[in-house]
Amino acid sequence: DAGVIQSPRHEVTEMGQEVTLRCKPISGHDYLFWYRQTMMRGLELLIYFNNNVPIDDSGMPEDRFSAKMPNASFSTLKIQPSEPRDSAVYFCASSLGAGKSTDTQYFGPGTRLTVL
Amino acid sequence: SQQGEEDPQALSIQEGENATMNCSYKTSINNLQWYRQNSGRGLVHLILIRSNEREKHSGRLRVTLDTSKKSSSLLITASRAADTASYFCATDSTLTFGKGTMLLVSP
Image (cartoon, rainbow over all chains, first blue to last red; front, top):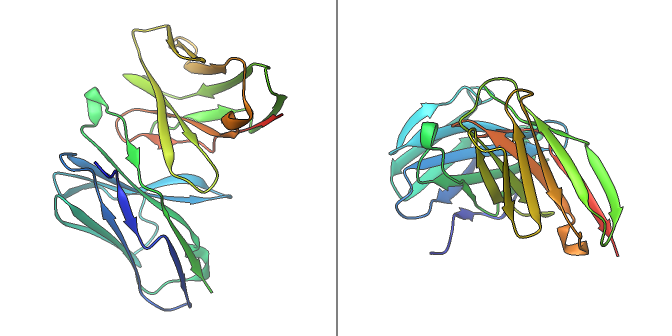
């Protein structure tokens, strides 16, 4: 398996533009997680899905952020409109399970977003 | 959420020395995991220890867990320059992470 795939790897955009980050989880994994990492705040869980259904989106910073998982092999994280403070590395991760039988999370390489 | 907090924030050692980093958490757990992140990369799982285990080994890694103190430690023995990375712990189902321990191993 190719692992978790994220695209693009780097994104530079201007304030106010819409940004869409993409993730393809490992085939067969039921859980998908979106994280944001900055020096100031560390690694923050934004949202996670189980079987394509959003389970916990309490980490989504505000309404400008939205995430979808239309099928088991694809998820998007959208920021509209983007702001300079959204600049960060965004990671997608997937796992076979979570909860009482927590499974290992497999992380993608991340998307480095810069909002000018 | 059950967030793991790593300590120290940064650690600098020489090759061949042992590195110990700690993790504290707040509530009861089922297991605790340690991850490593090389600069510019995603996190990579290292080892998982269950709440009924006290110690676990994997190669040069040794993890301990003290549920009474709500703490865990990760020991890397005979460190190498390639061990230079940030190390994170995570607990519970949603695997929230702390800010990590940045380990620098000098040749």
